[in-house]
Length: 77
Image (cartoon, rainbow, N blue to C red; front, side, top):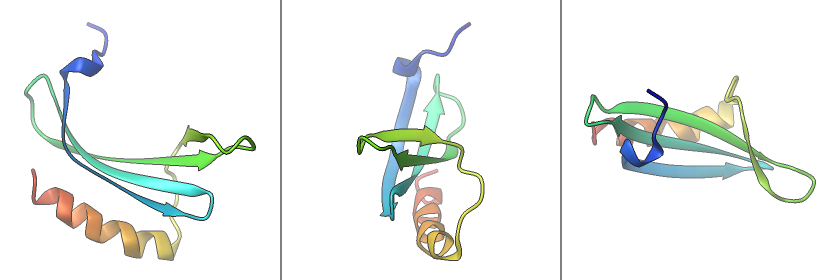
C-alpha cells in the first residue's frame, strides 16, 4: 500500500531558521498509529526556494536550538 499523505496526522510542528537552512521538528501519526518524531532540513537554492535535504550532521548552534524543540515535541507524544 503506497504512502497517503492524507492519513498522516501532524500533532506538533515547529521550524527554526539558520543561515540559508531551516530545520523542522514534527510529531506525526500515520493511520492512527504510534506518534513519531521527525526531523527534516531544507536548504535555500539559488532562486531562494526551500529544497529538502538530508538532515545529516548539525552544528553546535543548531543542536542548542533544536534540542529544546525536540523536548517540547516529546510532550505532545
